[in-house]
Length: 236
Image (tube, rainbow, N blue to C red; front, side, top):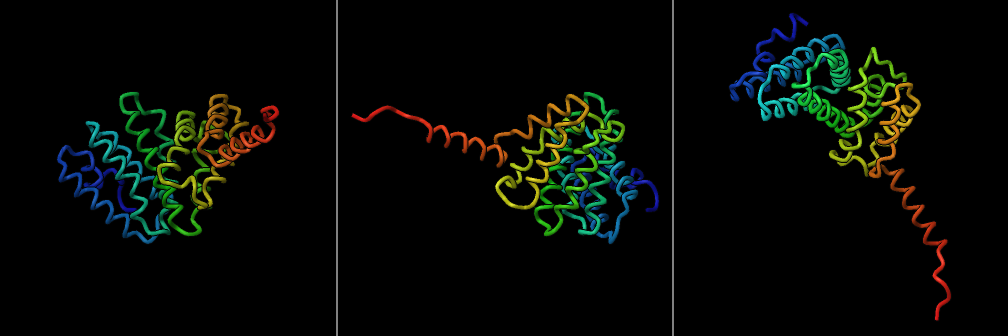
């Protein structure tokens, strides 16, 4: 890719206070990435670095929220062949930059991660046969079973564990057999043996979320057993 992504005018202008300029910049970005027939992970990292700084420089809550949503949904503008490298680039940059995000800026990046995870899960659900590739990305990054904090900081891991069920529910995927819910649950269950105590505890809590099908089933079976085993005495 020629030049750094951060030097592309339409990426720099994403942080503009001018709404029309921001909208035009998003449209240019969609056209640019949508026209690419291939994308290496290195190219994706360069682009996401520029987009990271665009959000970093964006002021005021409403523009921040809008930009986070637009950046997350860019995955839907990509040719199928470039979507997975794009996702890897996203998690790579978030992991690299996470510990440098100050408290005043953290909220907008938490939102970006939330919206991006939802968009990636939706993309996997909407593309036949794509679930294993998307799950592999998540397994390599935010749900990495090795718990290597040099690769993915603990704060990013904890946030992913906090939101994965929420975003499955938001995308209406909890009740659908899209090959996502059970494999994601297996990844989270594996983190229950993580050597990092906070990750281990958060994994346990999220795996036992009552919205998940295996938790709901267990609760239903327990209720059934209680009903069958109860005795109300002799009838009159």
